[in-house]
Image (cartoon, rainbow, N blue to C red; front, top):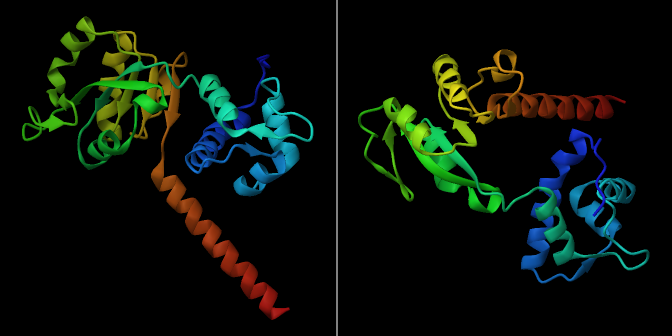
Amino acid sequence: MAKDKNISMSVIRRLPRYYRFLSDLVDKEVDRISSGELAKRMNLTASQVRQDFNCFGGFGQQGYGYSVKALKNEIESILSLKSGYNSVLIGVGNLGRAVAMHMEFEARGFKLIGAFDQDRNLIGKPLNHLIIKDIDGIDSFCDENKIDVAILCIPKEAAESIVEKLYGFGVRYFWNFSHFDISVAYPDTIIENVHMSDSLMTLCYRITDAKRNITETIQK
C-alpha cells in the first residue's frame, strides 16, 4: 500500500466515517460496493471517494468496485486501530464517566489503563475494569506506566496544571474536552479537541439558515 506523505487532514477525518459505514455493511453481509454506492451512503461524490482512496494507493478494481471487508481492513490498518496506545482518563464526572462507559477504546486503537479524579466520593469506585484513583497519585502512576495519551474531561481552569504535569512525564498526545488550548503552551503535542458547545452552536446556525432559506423561497 503506497501512501502519500502529504495527505490532507480533510481526507484523514473522513477515514473514520468510511470505517463506520463499511463496518455496518460488513455486519449486513454486503460483499462488494462501488464508489458510487459508497458515495451515496456518505453524501459524497464518487470522484471524492476514489480520490480519497487513491491517497493510499487505491483499493478497488475498474468495473468491479471494492471488497467491503478488505476495504474495511485496509482503513483499519491506515488508522492503526490495533495500536493499543496506553491512555488515562482525567476527570470522571458525568462527561468522563460517559466517555469511559460508552467508548470502545480497544476497537479504536487505545487501551484505557487508568482513571483519575479529585472527588473523594468517586475515588475508589469502579469504572468498567478500573478503579478510580486519586489525581494526587498521577505522578507515581506515570512513573510505573508508559502513558501515551491523556483524555481530559475536566474544566478549563483545572487543565493547565494537569497538562503541565503530564507533559513533564512525557505525555504528548491528548484527547481534549477541557477547552484549554494545549498547543499554545506545548506546540510539540498532538491534540484532538472536542468542543460539543461549538457543534451545538453550529447546529443552531444551520437550523436558522435553513429556516431563512425556506422563508425566502416562499416569499419569491
